[in-house]
Image (cartoon, rainbow, N blue to C red; front, side, top):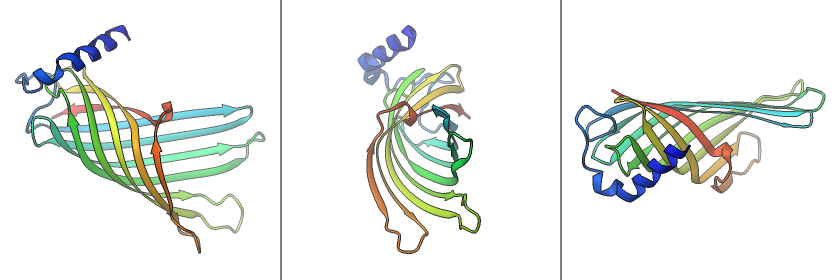
Length: 202
């Protein structure tokens, strides 16, 4: 942890001056690089005998079209289930989605780099009916998010990443009769908005 903190401070102090100094064949990203990415988030919350489990997996691809800017796209799968004190399901949700956007890396040529992005997403989530004879409820969610990330290349090709949800806007609408769209502006301030993943530079 101490090493990470000291490295982050060094990035903030000297990153802008070194942003253009990409080492050929070394760690980091530069103009023309293509990379694969993948983020995941697993959470388990227990309150008494009640439990909530959530899983999110989102593989993607990115392309550096300048020294600092990348365009990215990804596909995602998410699932979540909650149970009551008796062990009965109180909700059972799954969904698929896609997202696309741009990301700015402050020090892409270095092993450590901070980033900020703008991502547009489209998701379709299904809440499974838990009562016999009831219909599943499908909800369409359109979102705009400004994620903040920290990336560390452990080798010339592999990087470990953490992404914080940051500021976001979403509009969701279930497919039930008479349902209205629900619009939200969110500022993720808890650990559930942090995702961990990998980058592989091709």
